[in-house]
Image (cartoon, rainbow, N blue to C red; front, top):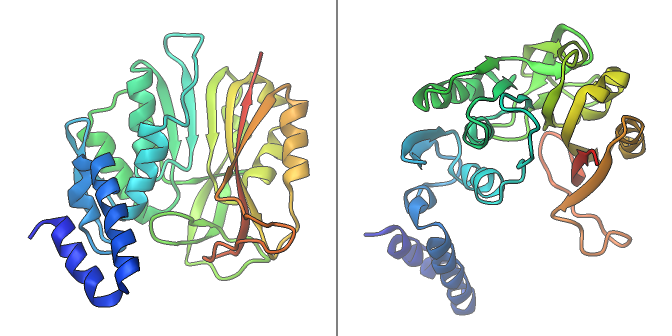
Length: 280
């Protein structure tokens, strides 16, 4: 039985007729848009596996999260930028399973990529995927970017969302090594990508004037419902470093003055922003 037929059978048993019709329609659309990933779509929730990416086997820790990352990074090219040199330096904070690293090396094959992923379980996938693709000029570090070199508590959340455990937000699952980002900004950086789950403001505040060496910047900002917002501080840092900005809102609340959509997890996130900094 194919993935579509199997899913249709399950839907009939648990949903009313109209909901089944709508769900089947959505399933057909998804299969038409991603026919190469029918095998991934057929997996149960939170299942690990592998599929072909650019003709090579690519391992993932969670199928649904892989599809999200593929759409964002490969299909939509959210990190695309113009480099002014043939061998650009790219710093990838929060490299996860390595789709971003693969994308950067396809965009600029001679690029030097320094990638960081603190979750030891996810880091293994990052390592294997980079080895499968035979990526040269890539340095992988099992550590988190932070404002100092140290060891800090870390909260795991499976495939996406793991973060440093700050003193005000709960239990740490393990200790991870941290590396000071400021120390990496002594030479020109073509792209600095930071998807570091709530540590972004503190990390960039520590960098100060060193951000003048960064040509392009991507930061995912996380607003936690139970903590003070730091967006004003983050935007001030980016502005003071001479960047112009462009912002994407990830799944915005339809009526934010009335009710905010809360993403539950380790922390309750009430807003996600993708902030792009560029120079004219």
